[in-house]
Length: 334
Image (tube, rainbow, N blue to C red; front, side, top):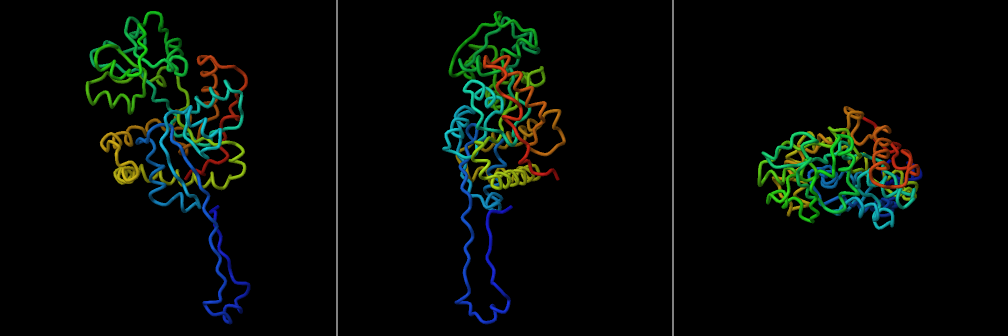
């Protein structure tokens, strides 16, 4: 339901007796302002947000939307939780982890943006890494937080990899460590991280965690539950606009790229074009393939909870699937 209304005259007869100067004037209600924070610096995966903004789809729903870049899911979850933003993009797995650790139940996901986890093992061409067991005896460059927050431990256990046989290199510049030959592999997104590395040196095909038994739901639209309860129409309108814009991105990715660049002129246009193209394959899991954009399967939510509880050293039994995700605001599939 659009968040505006128009007044009318009391009776048709009155119209004939009033001049234009004396007709009552009814203003539209002010649009609902929504501050949005992305999960990371804007990339091709975020193109639908800028298309919805640029084409006026948010405005058509009675929304005044501003979009800010993020610096990771944790920061976005905190910003939604403290009310400094209304809607954010954050990994659903990260939300599960934060909810379990801090014991809060005031944020939920309402829409899935990245459902097949792009997390992968990335190595340079000729590394000899073609299967998970090939990681043994190799050098692994990573950030300290990745060992506890990431799923590398789960990937290793599920695929029979002995982490004690891997040399660990803790660094803030893990991509450079790989490119300089100081490490044999890293743990990052196949796209766009793998693409960025491939711009400098040829890489082996990224080894996706999701293809080797580990898939944690990624970037999702999250909202604080009390704000959601008070602005249900606004959230529905937001997701309708986003879905319409996503259809446009699929239909004309070049036009979507041009709109994106209007809002982020300093972005690498070639890289964004590539991301718009390749990131689409991460929108769905096997359970939601062919279904509406944004719809998440409850089984995938539960799988994410199970993986996070088992491998991220968080309290178990607190988080439930319906605590961190609802499909009640999902636009109807065409």
